[in-house]
Length: 265
Image 1 (cartoon, rainbow, N blue to C red):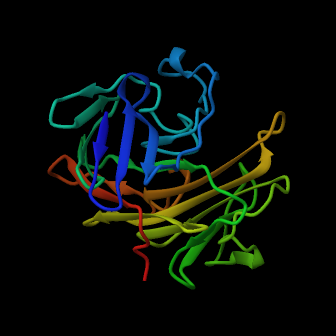
Image 2 (cartoon, rainbow, N blue to C red; image 1 turned 90 degrees about the vertical axis):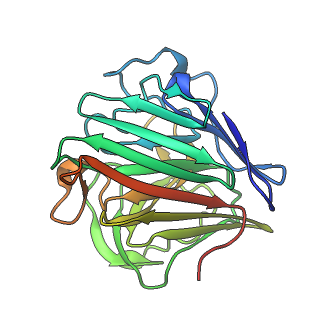
């Protein structure tokens, strides 16, 4: 599916047949999404180990944990002519509608009380000079290793680890979840912004900065900026206020807005 916006121009391409992944996010001739080809993504089925093909994954109801990267990435999505795409999983259904202007509206339907984390797990093709803007001094949870626990701190340097710069490969793989609803990536003259709107669920921006530190064998570089509902990567670790919860209506709605300009204060 392809959607164009106004100025600056922005185009989204998705692959409903293979997990609903965004395979392209292009603005003014620049491709923002990093991708890995030839990794066997076309052959996966629910229950398989995660296959990282890059792009933007819809991770729900968790990012880490079980199932790894959620339950939607390995399933076939259905598409409607109005731009709506949906997927049915074991305990929930997720629907998204991509509108002109790169506004994406989501609806998750499940039994009341169902808890989940959702992330637009966007792996970006960035230069070593790229930087990330988030609100100064925002509360942050630093994940110093790919699979370890978090430590509390403040953006941009929780526990003294500077995270607003991507930089050259150094053999590290660090994650963070920051209490914010907007993020802006600067890469030389180019800009890419995410804004997340939701009434009720906790909103955050996650960062995945893998500079050749993951996986343990055949490590590669992958850098992610991820608007989230929730405040943890692993739903199993979510405390009170750390995850979205389905209300009595049986629905949670939210909106993601992507623009090729800086929307941060």
